[in-house]
Length: 575
Image (cartoon, rainbow, N blue to C red; front, side, top):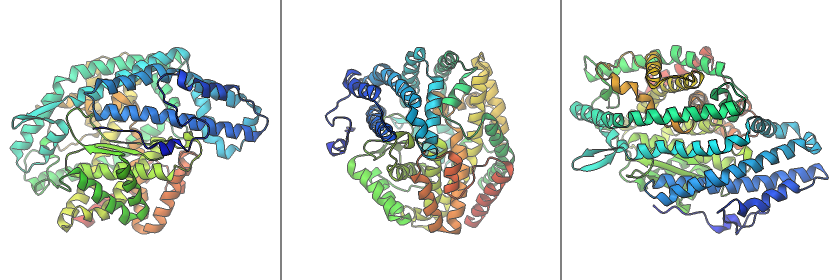
C-alpha cells in the first residue's frame, strides 16, 4: 500500500523551518539547532518565541519519524522502508537527542526560565529536568540499537501464518475461527495458532533476553539501580509510583478476578460443558456464529463516521477528514505488522489510524478505540508546545477507552438487530472485565523482569506461571496445555517494543468506566467535561486532567469496587 506524506499546504504553515526541508541527514537540520543554541534572550518573550520555534522543529522531526514507522509497518517485506526507519533511529535520532539535551540545558540555565508562569510550564519543566537526569552520551548508540532490535518482534510476528484450505492466513485471520460455533473447529485452530507461536517461542525468548540486557545496561550507564527506575523517569511517571501499581494489582485481584470467574462459570454452564477449555472462551455463549459488523473495510470506515457523528457531529467530521486525507490503513494482509495504533502527527495535526481488520467485533472495538485517540489528537491540536501534545498513556488511553464505552449505543449502525447489538455490548463489557486481570499480570511480570536482573528463561516462565495463576481464570481448564500457557506472555507486543507501557491501559480503563458512568447519568455534561480534559493535552498533571473530566485518579479497592459494581449492573441490564 502506498502511504504518502500529507499535502504541502501543511508545510506552508511553518514559521521557523523552511517548507522545502527534506530530512535525509543530520546536516539538513543542523542549521536550525545551531540557531536555537546560539540565540540570545533579552526578555521573557524571546524565550517563549524560542520555545515555539523549538517546538515547530520537534514536530517536524517527530512527524518524519512517524511516517517512516507507519510505512515500515504497512509493508514489512519492503526492505527499503525498514532501512529508512533504521537510518533515522541510528544516524539522525542520536544527533537530535544530543541537540535537544543541549537545548534543555540552555532553557533551564536561562534566567528568564524562572520568570515563566509556573503553572503554565510546570509539566514542561519537570519533563526537561527528567530528560537531563537520564541523558548519557554513551547510551545513544545503545538506544538506537535497541530501537532497531525491538522491531524484530513485529517482523517475526508478521511472518507467522497457518495453512487453511490451501492458502496461508495470518494469525489474526485464524483467530476468527476461535469464535466458530463448531467446537472441533475452534480446537483445531487453537492448536494451529499456538503450535505456530511455539515454533518461534525460543527465538522470542532469546530476543527478550537480549533486550533486557541492553536495557539494564542503559539504566546502569545513567546511574540507576535497574531499568524499572530508569524507565519510570524516562516515562515521566511523576504522579504515581511502583507501589501504586502494586495497589492496582491487588485491587484487580480482589475486585475484578472474582467477577470474571463468575462470568466464566456462567459461560461454561450456557455452553453445557463439563470442562471449559481455552478454545471455548471466544465463542458466543449461545453457540451462535460470530458477529460480523462489516464485510469490507470501506463499510467499517463509513459506518464508523456515522456512529461517531451521532455521538457528536464533530467526531464524525474528524474521521471523515482522515478518510479523505488518506490517514487510514485498516485491512489485514500478509507482510503487514500485527496490531493497531493511532499515530499522532504533530505538524499535520491529523492522526493516522493503523489496524489489521478482518471483519470481526474486535475490529469494531479497535476502530472506536483508535478513533478515541484520533479525537484526542484533534482536540489537543491547539496546544502550542509539542510536549503538551505528547500524551502520557494514562491520559491518551482514557480518551480511547472512554470512546469504546460511550459509542456502544451507536453501534446500532452496525447491528440493526437488537439481539445482535446486545451480544456486542455484552462482549464489550465482559472483555473489559477480562482484560483488567491480564493487564495486571503483564505489568506485575514486567516489574519482576527488571528487578530480577540475572534470571534465566526457565525462571522467567515459572514466574509467569505463578502470576497467571493469581490473575488467570480458576474456571478454564488448561490441563495438558501448559506448554502453551508458559509462553502466553509472548503475545504481548509491549513487553518487547515498549517496556512498562501497559499498566496505563488498566489505569485508563478504570477512568473510562468512570467517564461512561457519568455519561449514562448526564450525556452532554459528561461529553463537555470529557472534551475539556482532552483539550488540555498534557499541559497539567494527570490527576488534574482526570479531575477536569469529572473523575478520580484512584487505584484503591473501594474505588475499583464502585466502578466494577457499576459495570456488573450494566451487564445485568443487557441480559
